[in-house]
Length: 454
Ligand SMILES: Cc1cc2nc3c(=O)[nH]c(=O)nc-3n(C[C@H](O)[C@H](O)[C@H](O)COP(=O)(O)OP(=O)(O)OC[C@H]3O[C@@H](n4cnc5c(N)ncnc54)[C@H](O)[C@@H]3O)c2cc1C
Image (cartoon, rainbow, N blue to C red; front, side):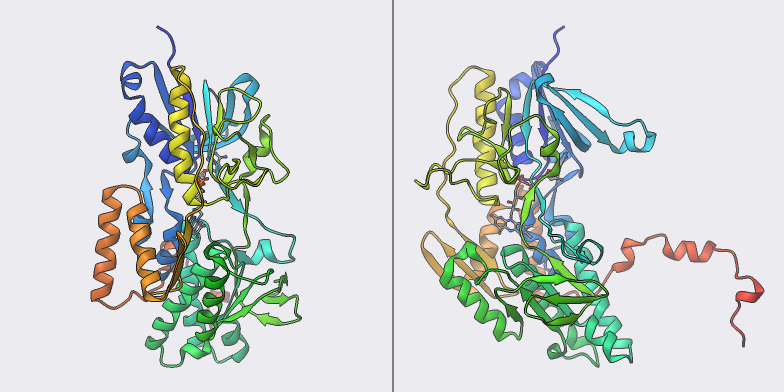
């Protein structure tokens, strides 16, 4: 019996999940006959719907509903939880590590393939800012979003219980670096949540919290255009958020954020959302990369100059055929990722059966951003909206986009319930250390010399 043709999908995010989903539909007969196999390798058993992360941080959506379980959605694919470490496309092999190989210390496994779909997305683009790696946090994963929510509420608990004004001020100062939609939405949602939560603290008023947005360019939210970006600045400043344009973070050592305008902000919270760069695995392949480390691709989403390799999403430099500007690439966003995945899957299926491939082209439709509960900004198909209508549009748009009916229903139910009841204001930071309580109980009693004297 001949081996099935193996399609290896690297990454289970937007592109990975949607490509595999469409492939398993298009190749239903081949999968049933065992002539084709789809293997998805991804570090987490779920796809994260990243545009919902700010709302998850604000507590408006529970973390489980921001993610889509891959095993349920991709029931005809093989899901391997692990990471691709390197790819030798000339030999059609990928080296991976899985949870099991790490446990066994066996140094990983090699997987051969016939078609390669590269969709490992991007990671936070950091700069060599002193203290950044040790003290800052990103905002790309559900773990970071929930960790940040817990952290913000914990800082309010610290501020509420300390008598030291320096500790209190540092605890109540929150610095966000990067004014794209991830940074602005995360800041705006968390500020809104903290402002509400403050009413349950006897000694913290919303004005005591200091929120700072640091942006290197002269505007924020470039995705919604200049006018709406200016409106967003006014809206944030109206809420006492300190928006610093043309300013950079110079260092964040010793719990002090130092800005390029000379400001020193004692703080225990630095959130870094200053852009993304392609996933590091791309550098460990023999495939062509551009100067920014993205995979060079054709408009048909094939990797340039090689056969049987495909890519899309944040990791891929796909020519924007709708722009008319030579050399312009599609921006790294979900709008392109979802649409590219559809064309990518169709082209992989077409190439297997010798049919012609089609080009990817999508003119950017604009963007919507939430600025907290009932506040937002949007610029879509030339229409500009702000305030409640923009916020409503943001929710309606993302509800229509979040994958699976199951998720849509759960998110809608949560939004409806949160409209009827008060907001959740609890920090479950202890979830990050679930064994702490038991370790304390199981620890040997202190030696006599360690006992506090009465
Ligand atoms: C907070 C936030 C809000 C956003 N809001 C919007 C928005 O409103 N509108 C919009 O258009 N875009 C938005 N985006 C951007 C959008 O989410 C991304 O552009 C989109 O996720 C890109 O899809 P992708 O498949 O390329 O990457 P991802 O969805 O990031 O998926 C990459 C996957 O590959 C996996 N992976 C990485 N390395 C490896 C490896 N070595 N081996 C195996 N798997 C690997 C990752 O774990 C991940 O599962 C937002 C992003 C963030 C962070």
